[in-house]
Length: 180
Image 1 (cartoon, rainbow, N blue to C red):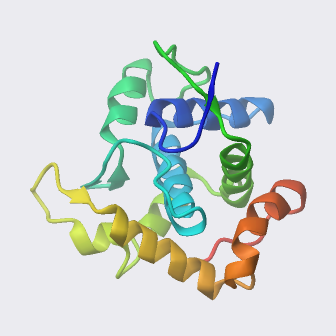
Image 2: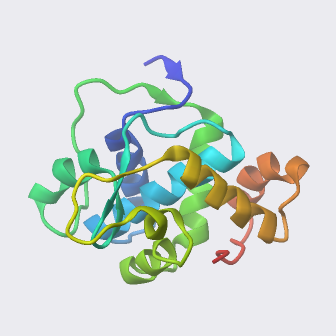
């Protein structure tokens, strides 16, 4: 497997998050998986300034969704315990691997509904793009990036120098509280 930098196939990122949950003996619902992948994508846009996934995020009724993840994992039921088989996977860059572990640790104590509430905040990317009864509305990465950069600025670790170190710090220590 060759190492690649982002963006990755969103299903591969979802597989990584499932593995993190599995290592901790935790269940992963499809909604939780969608929200965690979205959060990881947002933090990657804010910190590394590159998209994490090569897929788009859409504003669905219940929040931001990466359709390729939904359609790949939903047929297996609400809870997914094992990663899906992908035709081609590339090795995840170590910085991204650390970021995924950090994001999982940051949000691991939140259930799917709590994560969903975080994605529905007024002025957030989903709120700014969602239109009731309309489908396939893409949430632009620029909007997601600005939102997560603002979250980073509001956190106690929000300076530019700190942002890259946040990934590694969070991966080793107790998780900071999510910034709303």
